[in-house]
Length: 504
Picture 1 (cartoon, one colour):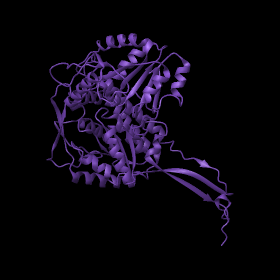
Picture 2 (spheres, helix red, strand yellow):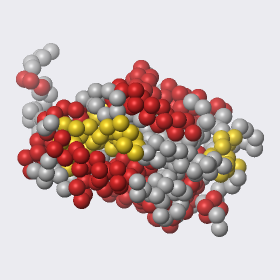
Picture 3 (cartoon, rainbow, N blue to C red):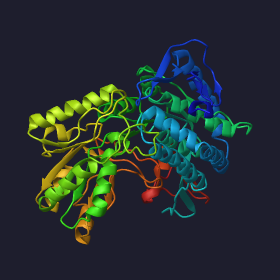
Picture 4 (cartoon, rainbow, N blue to C red):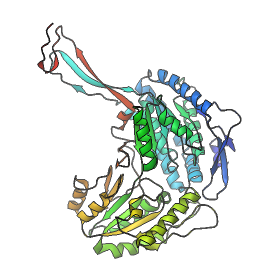
């Protein structure tokens, strides 16, 4: 049985869903899903029309009125069922992620495991939507805070994590009492449809309102509608810094709430004491995993000049051993980039490195005669170069010498993004300095592990042009709710705060 058959996908699939029901007409423009490994058509998904968008928004509003009344632990049980269904379909869905997006099978399965882990977290969180009680300065008064559902949550996700990022938002939004509308990337539409079917089949016959909704659009028309739509109470956007700035501005203009998970220009600091037995594999996975198409991908290596030559030699050797090819082949460690444009962007960046005075140590060649493959690149560079300051979304790693830890920290922080960072060191003082307010300015700072591979439970997100949003752990659930402060007077008097007298 093929991957598509295992996931109940056809050659042409409906793209507009309200719960487990498609509301789409038989005709409509098609979004073609192209296999980045071969350049061939996998299947197609129907484009959502403006009329269908309106039907879905109306249905979502009606569902919210019912869903918000259901107790949070019951909402958590719904997500428990979804998590169980994802466990049953992990192999098939992980394979689809590899087929449609191009990341290797282990990473595809790992992304589905993120969804399962997120479901587990959400189930527990459904019983911990805590508000704080505060002592009032007025006698016989009680003051506390509570949290209420927001309403509709719009989710615009990116191609590089075609299933997991939706779950980060949707599962927490759901247990908080919200209803979600998902607009996946037009580069990975089949993953969106497959997830919609799996999750809603798990909730079938439970008597619950339609909490998950899906729209598809190969253009930016529906994305823009979600951004501008006053019915969308929270808009979660994952994508580039450039587009994210516009999203944040437009949502703020209508006084809506937003979560932004944008680009990264992530660095690893390697000091004099670093253990290369873990440093080298940490760098290689961080820079080559998902063909360099993660927001947490390692882009820059800031290495102490005393160990520059040694690290350069070891990294070049490691890069030359990386098997490149079909991501569904268990031996492959790097698959294709998502499309031809992405390959061309990497090639253009290599030219700019040459023009700036850098040296290409390895990589940059096209691989094979079909698909979107390029060999991973290591280049010597200077941190201040324009090409280094901008994020190239692909397997391009810059090797930059530093004179000291303070020099390395300054260079790491001297970019406009602030997502993920790491240091490899056996020096406790250096590790603690890196983690202190004198160190990394990123939302994520690691010691002796790489920049990539976020663990569910910790709040994921960054600072500066990365957007400032937090998802997937800690108190990120609060972003999906509205806070209310309540003061109750249970006395027969009416004392005012701050001792104010107002006798009438």
